[in-house]
Image (cartoon, rainbow, N blue to C red; front, side, top):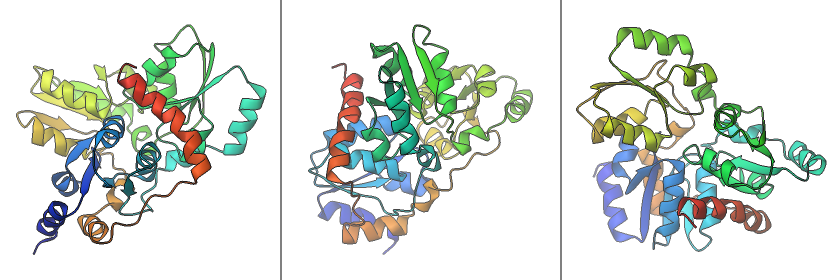
Amino acid sequence: MSTQREIKRLKGEKDIVIVAHNYQMGDIQDIADFVGDSFGLAQKVNELEVSNVVFCGVDFMAESAAILNPDKRVILPDLKAECPMAEMVDIGDLRSYKEKNPEAAVVSYVNTNAETKAESDICCTSSNAVKVVKSLDNEKVLFLPDKNLGNYIKRFVHDKQVEVWEGYCATHDNILPEEVRRSMEEHPEAEVVVHPECRPEVVDIADYVESTAGILERAKKTASDEMIIGTEKEMGYRLEKEVPDKEYYFPGNPTCQNMKKITPEKVLNSLKSLSPKVKVEEDIAERARRPLQKMVDLGRGK
């Protein structure tokens, strides 16, 4: 029996759901029950009435799902599927900043580990980052860890002092403006849509700036037959699957190697063994749950 057929058989026999991020390979997206961006998946796992969740993404995503759902077993098929940007926060430096700036609200991108979230006031994703910062009463805000997303927020928030950590997503930061311009010259009728983790110079020349969920919605709405996309290339698989009547171009062919550590074989092993389980120390999980839940509640309009 093929790996994919065995996965589908085991899913039917066990109380288990597979969720996958948009940057997962196509054969992972095909076996998932739900595919989405980090915010959408955080909401979905929170809503699922299921005992076991296999999370096909990177560590911080599965960790967030486990924190929000202590009654569920959250499984990450490869615990080495890590997010380098999440490791760019030094907890000692963050605590020192908080001591010196007690009036500041700390907003952490979901692309952070549990210990960072535990030191935060609220979390956000790329799709709701501006909304989250605007919702705060604090006049001073520290946004971490992505400087590009932080600088994007500052374009829309003018009534607060927004300070930005010096982290970045290498996958998006490596999308260069000259590559985007070259693609624009080759496809002059194409609409340009980029992720807010891209460099400011790339954001400046885009027609739209969207999360991965927003990119998909833009593809469904636009009258353009071509789109230049500034994000991880596997987003193209979902776009081609759900909106197949367009051509998609990814300048620089950006790739997140950590996302590619999740394979069908590893997913199958996880289904058989219900492991490896994502574990977060109880005291850290309790403190990290509050800012995560605030993010989810804000998304629901609470």
